[in-house]
Length: 297
Image 1 (spheres, rainbow, N blue to C red):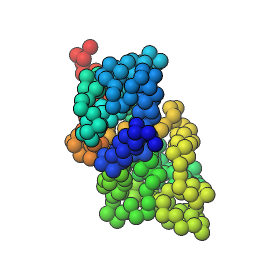
Image 2 (cartoon, one colour; image 1 turned 180 degrees about the vertical axis):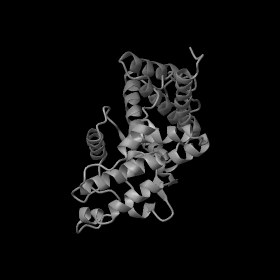
Image 3 (cartoon, rainbow, N blue to C red; image 1 turned 90 degrees about the vertical axis):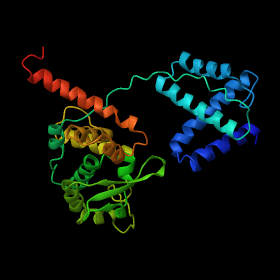
Image 4 (cartoon, rainbow, N blue to C red; image 1 turned 30 degrees about the vertical axis):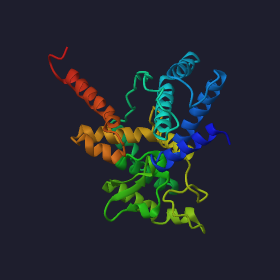
């Protein structure tokens, strides 16, 4: 193993143990560093000997080949974190990433379903066993704002129907408790009363939501279920699991919830991430004003 390989391994271990970053994030960081390693080798240098100009040219190359600003911004964060780590570990006496500039991102507003559309979607579907499961999943998504990975990872012990909450592990394996509304509680009870046992069969899975083979649902399976559910409810637009999360946050703010509470329920580490939803509520207010005020034009 080369010294550079060792440095990368130490950094990725640090990201896992100290920062608690997910496996997907660590893999993205590793890909960035390996591409930087290859670029620096072509320039006759390495992690411990490169200069700020080398890093600037590396990011410029990414821009020239058409990498998205968001991807470049993530790579920038990778470089900054890595070289701070090398500095703190005594592998360098300086930080060549100090003056790197993060590209400005035009953050698109989240796609949100109206409250009327959500009410329409949360009507019972076709009379079938699986519709009980699907309705329960949709009710939990809208009631809690969980990410799809958090929803399909829920275990039986994570749901307290008598108290009305779910416990989930979010990004970085951070645990949070989110209230569960009464409609969601009733829908989950309906699913548990017979159907889940039949899906589980002779298996012993403790995962809450199972597919027809008694195994945990996949992300792709959840996306398919939502598309089919939207079609069966005559919805013109395609719906995704994250639209439920966006709608959860936006509707809470529309009805007076404070930003800090929404941040906690969503599991955002930084409140700046949650603030994107305030743009939606402001836009909603402007739309209402323009439609209702006699002198809005």
